[in-house]
Length: 120
Image (tube, rainbow, N blue to C red):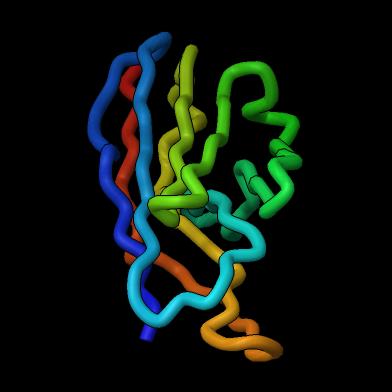
């Protein structure tokens, strides 16, 4: 069984910064990719940023230049540093990972979500 646990959400003023963290635990053989999604009220869940095992990253246009995703492969953790936050960044942020629990058995896993609220 695999679990993803997020931390670091909260309330911040526009222009401020937040750092979200996510730790994967359980029966993990390898982690292929880790990333962050978000879902604002009334909107679909969208990709924010992703980092694959080789270190390549990809960001949504809306956060590019303001956010940095990083990963600690030894600790099975991923972090998202968000700067210059805007009210439109308000959403529930979900950690996601593509994890192999054994060779050839790959699954998609999600955290429970952490609320980020940016006040104007």
